[in-house]
Image 1 (cartoon, helix red, strand yellow):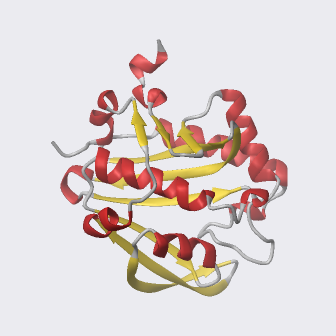
Image 2: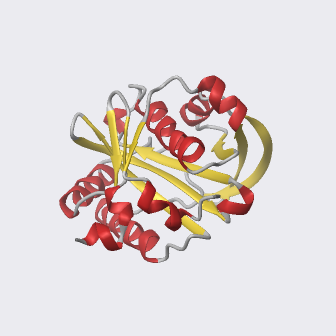
Length: 215
């Protein structure tokens, strides 16, 4: 079976309302449709690369290509896992977890997006909590990094709710204009204090060599 050669296909995270895993082909198509339908207000840009400014068909195609690209270039020393997020069986968005030299640095980073009609329901908090549990409880990470632009209040609110603390600022150019990026950091101690959402991990042991997880 394909999962025997690529065990990430068998990795699944579940929370009280959500399931996070790699998508089957038709589910990847559904994920692309969600992105093409809009994931943020057009007068804002929460991403460093403004990939959602393209026409809907190109946004959808980009989601598919990015999914294949991140899996194709995967190495244990440099990886990004893009989970598709399911709510009540429906594809609602994507939550990623990435790391470089995890065994040495014990540091991960996260990013996400969610279809607009699914905003404001606490889904963003729950899906971030899921990958943080994977990082700290499953992969032995010591800290998680995130960031949000000044107008990305929802993302910053999720981070603070989960225990992240401010970790400096940076100036960035987005859509040809300067914007301020607020960097945030979550330590293992703060994660343990704020980890109130139950998360179940399935299929992790055969994946550990692919993550370059610490012994």
